[in-house]
Image (cartoon, rainbow, N blue to C red):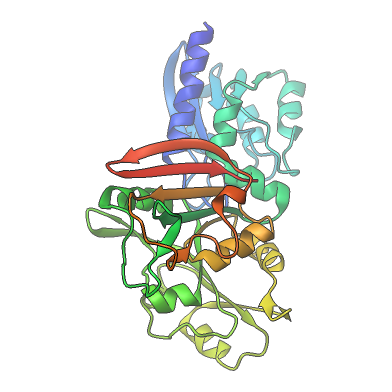
Length: 359
């Protein structure tokens, strides 16, 4: 019998995982409702975060929910969704038992829904495939705990740990298959974190492309102390498609021009001739940015490491030597000095992708 329960909870995890990147800042949750060991409905968190997975599955099942079993990857919400809390909707539906992979750490819900279901004589089983929920929604749990965005640094590097030649002439270090995988990483990301230096050098679009077609314009946070970002840069061409948050110093006269274009401008106090990254991250979390992919140079990477703001490092290593005059992957430091744990590797022809856990 347990094999069926495992099968259904794994299916709920599959649909949650495939939906990752579409629900920010909410977690991606999957839900299956079964009766007599047959699936009668399924649901996954909608792209706006509402309605929730359970709400969608219950609506699809209708009256068939009476006496059925629900499998959900995260504790149903205790606070209100579109038609009351998911917990109250479960109680109204006649569901007789609920399998929950993981307790929600949001204090609005944590254990409250489970206790209410139990008080109302619903059988509740907790913990099956908990690690899958934690893995899929790592950004959610980490950002909720630390009150700052979950942050991944992505770098293409040479075999001698350089990211560019001294003249920045070469655009690509990694191969086309690595770059294709980067778009997969981007598709599961809420926002890019970059600098005005990177924008001036590369004029990036920061999109997700598939078969050479743009399928997503990513939200972008630009650290730009002196507001050097050009107003005609590619990034600012599609502001109706995405959020662009410019972080700059207070009382910059150019701020108004960016606001008029449709950018959000976050003005911060200069400390020791720098913008305070920890304070920036606290503000970004308040602006509902809970997940960042860093695409910039070695200076920002070094500052993020120094401030203990990096959760993951994604490296694409190519078999080329740039030499000692090249631009280092991390300014004033080395990758070897960073305490990290290797959690995944993939070969993309002659490129090696490595994913590391840092904090």
